[in-house]
Amino acid sequence: MSSLPESPEELYDALNAFRQIIAESSGDFPSKGKSWEELEAIIDESIKMDTDEHHGKLTIYSLKGGDDVQQVIEKAWSKYFSRNALLARVFPACSKWRSKSVIG
Image (cartoon, rainbow, N blue to C red; front, side, top):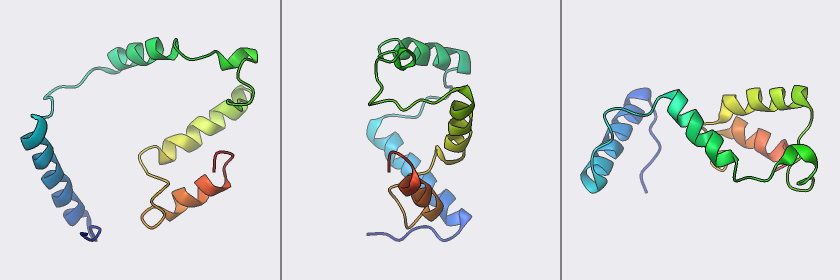
């Protein structure tokens, strides 16, 4: 098993090596992605498949507070969205918050 990169340069090199492996095994990354408007439309369409948690139909599965609580949740989530809370060794702060949350 390889060790974790110790510097930004090593991380950059590892990421480039990963990109090369992906490009060789399954084709190149697209040169241009979708715009936010396109992605948002896709996401909004997908959400229509979900049960509406705003009208008391999912009380045991969706612990949704008011708009003020939702705003705090979204701001906190955005700080950690690209980190994997299961990797406590790499992201100890993220892991700490995960263990203290309702879902942890």
